Structures are given as structure tokens and as C-alpha cells.
Length: 346
Image (tube, rainbow, N blue to C red; front, side):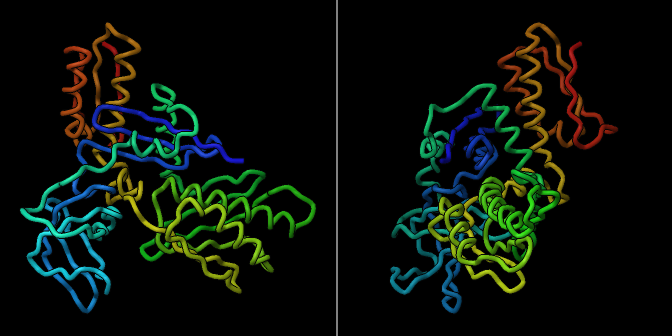
């Protein structure tokens, strides 16, 4: 039997929602002040058709801000024309240079604009609440844990062994390693590792916000295909509708497709160089300042960070000054490592 719990961490500049599955992070939902509202999953937008590609059955829609959205044209859909105003819903957020995927609602009037904002993080978490929503310090710690796990590449499996998840331009590769998993019979040990890997992969792909084509390189050979496919369908069921499986190949790989609906967490949290972005570091800095300011109410706090992170944190620091008074000092240090976050009481 599985248990899901929901956690809500409301911070300065960012709200984070976490859903856990049997105590481990399964989903991390981020909402930042810098997000473009008309590009967010679930938002309803009035857009204007910029270009129609009949040969590709696609329409590119100006949403008012950010990249054009992409509307798949179906034979049963009302005809759309270039220059037309239409109402659409964001069904998948933009990612990796590709525009948001849209659902046509109907005709509209006026310039591109946000019609209805996306559901809040708290509203989204309501669908997963089997117990009361957890907030406060416990929620913040769980959100930090979820963020760290979402950015990791290798993960231990219960009972031994591990899986590695490597996103590439074409697909998501998942490698299963039996390692030193205990057990007398090698075939039984390998089978158990593969089932554990499927369960872990389903949870971690949800947490990472990854999808598209997924190739799982199973351990061993001579697999029980029907049993493994049945297990895979069960653990990936929460990602439906839209999950599709191929047979296990003679090379021992399982291929499946998982719908992409959100930005991957790596895209949200990291820059093009693979390091935490200035905004991510700024929000971590702000949480560190908030923690120290609460712990030591009378202290004057000096915060040191690299210039990019300090610049990104400056607007948020003004919000904290409104809460804690003029006892916070932010110093940009050109000699500091890019990820330095130092908070000291003076």
C-alpha cells in the first residue's frame, strides 16, 4: 500500500510544493515570482495565431509574452487562420527551446493576454492530500530534500544496486545496476533489482519533471517480459493519460513514452552551464537569511555572495528588510565562488 503526503513551503520569491510517495519526494512543484504567467501549466490565454503550417498540422500562437505556443491541428478541430484571436489552455510548458503545447478552447477577441491564471501550488497539492497539508520548517526541509534529489543522477535501490538517470537530447536513459545486491540466486536477485528499478524510475522521473522517450536498460538477460511490463504499467499509471510502452527488446531494454507537462527541474534550477542559476542561488540565499534572522532576532546579518547571485537576490532582500528591519547587509564579492552563500552575524 502506498501513502502520499503533501508539503507547502511559501517563501520570498518562490513557493514550493512537494508530494511524497512512502516518505520519498515524488513531485516538486515550483512557482516563482519571475515565472511568465501566460506560459504556466493550466493557464488559459487569449492568443493570436501568428503562423499556420498546414503541412505539419501545426499553428504557432503568440501568447503575449515568451515564446510562441504550439497548437496541434486535428481534422475534427475548428479551422484557425493566421491573425485570428483564439482562447487556449497551456497543456505542457515550454522547454528546451520548444514552445508550450496548447489546447484550443475556442474563438476570442482582443490582443494576446492572460485570461485565467494557472492553479496555485496549494490548489495543485489538494489533489494529492491524503493527510493534512504540512507547512512550516518541515515543509521547507522536505522541499530542500526534493530539490537536491531532483538534480542528482544516481540513486540507490532498496535492497542494493542502483539506477542512473541521464537526460540526453533525444531521450532519457535509465541504467540499472545490480551492484552488490544480496541474494543467493542470481536470476532472482536480478529480477528483484529490475522491479525495484522500475518503481524508482517512475517516481524519480515525476520528481525531475522529465518525460518523452525513456529507455530503461534492464539488468541481466532472459527477462520475464509480461511480468516486467505489467509492473511498469502499474508504477507509471499516475502519469496517464499518455503513457505508452514498447516490448522489451532482445538487448534487454524497455522503451516507453511519458507525457511532458512541466519544465524539467534541471531547466528550472540550473543554467546552461549545468550549475545552479543565479536565481536559484538567490532564492537559496534568501532562505538562509530568513532562517538566521528568525534564529537570532537581534543580530545584524552580513550576507556575502558572488555578484550574479547577489544581484538576483537584491529585490528579495528588500522584502526581508520589510519583515526583519534594516539589519541585513548584502555584499557582492567578486572573489567569491559562484555558489557561495555566507550569512554571518556581526
